Length: 284
Ligand SMILES: [Zn+2]
View 1 (cartoon, rainbow, N blue to C red):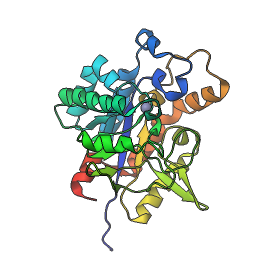
View 2: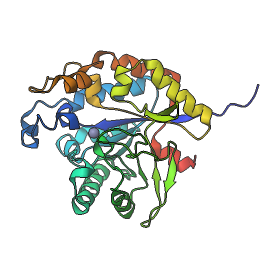
View 3: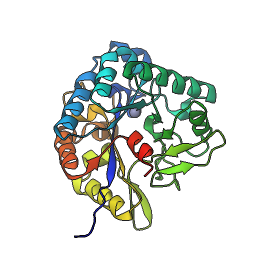
């Protein structure tokens, strides 16, 4: 029997409310956020239960906004052995922030998450993967603020997000401020193109086999595991529908919610995952 090296992938969760998704932004003003029914605790716990059932630990990129309102949720995530990382403060995309505001969000979210989890926060993921070409200053700021890795550069060409030409595997970023490791979301190569396969809408709306193929291809490439992401609202078919959302957005946001949990279970049964921080510590 030939020796077989187990590939560890990353299971990540962007911890935010259903109404904080960027697609909902034109329809839900930030000033209304505190008046809407909160769902993030219950839906995140659903994911925690699923991970526990599969004896798997992941990385939870959490908004400072959520941490302040639901401190017990952050404590619970950490206590279950998962890694707590930052998703910024209030889900403003980096394209909407100047360097000073970005630094404040990176610093404040990290402080509250470290305080609640009792562990160092090493990782950051921008809302909607919004560190796009031209905003590399954000990466310098992350390194300056003491982050060890970023998971915002989605190496795909898409309208409104993506970092075309970025590396598809975990890699070191050449920065002036210091070392920062990039942990890009999962992609798959097809006919000369790099296509998104990291999770979210792709995971819910395309056949499960697409995501499975992407993970298997990463394993075959021999450059480490892939990084998968999901949102609590994606396992919450009962979430209140937001008024005034156009049909296109409605389809993208709501389609496939009922089957997400079953699909997650299938992935967890088939592949091995670990927190991103453990991959960095292992050096591969
Ligand atoms: Zn997000």
